[in-house]
Length: 393
Image (cartoon, rainbow, N blue to C red):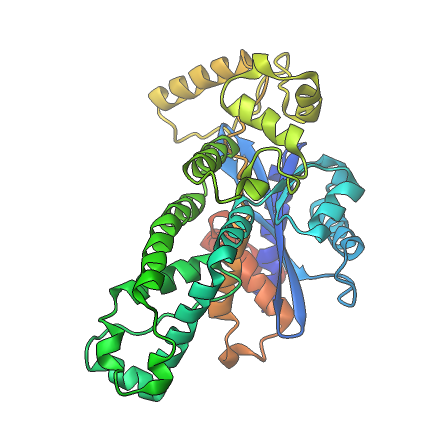
């Protein structure tokens, strides 16, 4: 454990040296047992490539307070004590559109890019509200199919099992409806079960399920597209606008439109989209002011990473790219993600590590394990040898 802590320190120092003068933070919270953990990734570009090192994976400094002040104290303390960085160097946040994150952004006067996946989840849930009476009946059918008696009867006709929905994840509703439509005719299986026949759907209700499944397939395809780490704000805007156009009567623009109330920093986001779409000349004065932190100082030579292993051709192409960038007013902002899915995936991976068999693992051990696993590209056997050598001195 001593060497793990030393390697962690080495990686933190490496990240601190690599952080540019301006960068963004992607963050989210996760509660496990009686502990609330805040995970924070940095977000910046170097040589036109996006970098997203994990900065912190630890409980709040004040675990009795889950409000914005406690989050701010944890973020500011982590940046200053671990990475020697002032909060003024943070030029944007990416996170869920919840009230706590909005308050954090307002207090620190930092733009918040609301997670597009979170907005889509809200829009899909709103879309499903009008059909909840049908969806609820399908959910009840699936619940009965997971009982011993129901599952046994289902196995006589198919190897497929029932799929239950998770009320906090709309995509689970899509999966449930899709499974319902692929199951054999349930009336033939449960004709002798009065408890079951009383909740079976009629022809008109089944028609509604087919229509719902077809419409939700569009939402599902957008959900999968948002899982791509390379989805930038302009691409996400195209996806949302297309979904609104395809479903004009679904009232989803409340959450998905560019000027929806849920959007915290609309001017900032529209400025980024215009930079990514190379429409800088159409930017308003407000948009220019909002994205001024991304403006390039072309009088200064660009910061490059010297790689002695690069070939002549690779160096020539890199220099050509840098010459092009010198003519640009703003840096390439395709590296800025429109979702905090990176953090969600981290929490999912953590569940496979923090199992019941490891419930006695020390919190610091878990934090260091996750930190080194995510930042595995920043250390190797040479790093381990170095800290082992230093520890013996």
